[in-house]
Length: 119
Image (cartoon, rainbow, N blue to C red; front, top):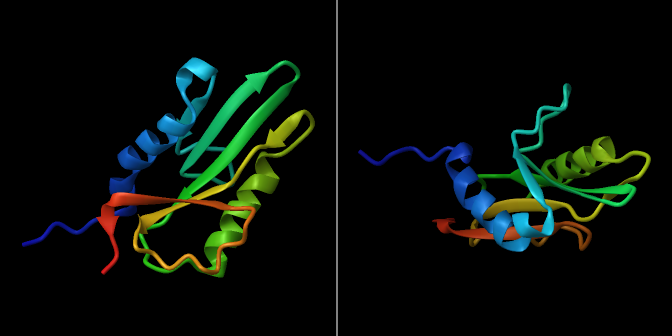
């Protein structure tokens, strides 16, 4: 019997992809399941530099088509993570390779994980 894949199975590959883009040596922290009280992004990437904090909300989806609720969710996380002296540097949605992401606007970046595919 094939193992049922869960969204959380994508987390290690997502963290690796984020780490390649945001190295620890450059001061970036990757916070998994960043519990902020009423909302929990799958990951928050964060870096403190001088008087600013740069944050990047990351949401992982085990779906083969991007939807408006996915976009709304990552935008809501970006609004909630923003604040005085906090800059939302980017926003990411993470999907399996082959996902239809034509709906995603230009202000949200997409990471496709090759280890997971849509058929």
